Image 1 (cartoon, helix red, strand yellow):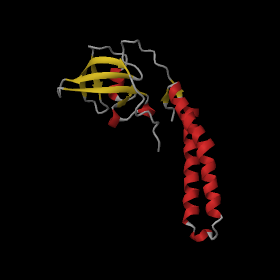
Image 2 (cartoon, rainbow, N blue to C red):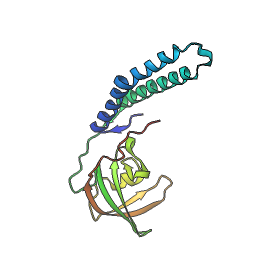
Image 3 (cartoon, rainbow, N blue to C red):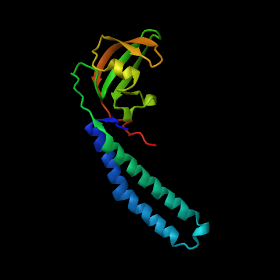
Image 4 (tube, rainbow, N blue to C red):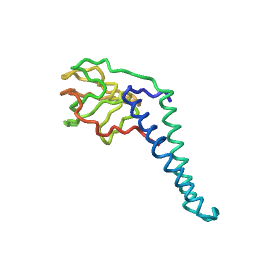
Length: 167
């Protein structure tokens, strides 16, 4: 896996693990015990549903722990006037005569539907460490490329869309 993560990403993952272990897991164990107490397990849908939820929670905990264990911690060393992690970037696409605003994030937080662009994506790599007014060449994996112009760079105001990718 070896996902690139910031210390903040690790903290969010650990918070989810703690929530699942300390709050959700005891509730799910109680639900399994309650369903088991209802008698005949061969036709007890609630029992099987409760066990499935408990297994899913345990699986998610293991997944998150493995992500933390194999993570590569990165830090943002960009200057205030450069594109870097968690910065808001207004980008002009000359070929389409359109402007988009992106937020540059680590790969586990990337979400194109919310304009959260991963530093490992073609456009993320092209924009990283550029300054307002710079033209960046976005090189696609198929060999094609296109130009974008960085109009402005700003600090991100919110944490919207910060959920860590699940499964």
